[in-house]
Image (tube, rainbow, N blue to C red):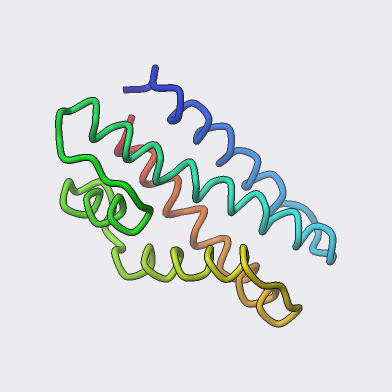
Length: 123
């Protein structure tokens, strides 16, 4: 499956998220990490959608439904954490405040691990 365009972009976005999380935390690094997480998130569910399509399975149309399908396929194990991820992504997109940014930034290491695990299962 590694020749899939979305998956290739997902691979790059994971590397970018990983590199920013290795930087010393500053407000700028925090905000950049959140933006990189948002991109990773978008490419994660779109990569799942692409993989489902390529296998001739039911196509999901939203992040939430794609992550549910990925769970059913055994591509992800942490369905509840992915549900939290969906909620956090919606929050980062539609509002901004320092407390929320700190809270989400503190979860990015866990999210990165989940993205890496998903990637392994999609490859």
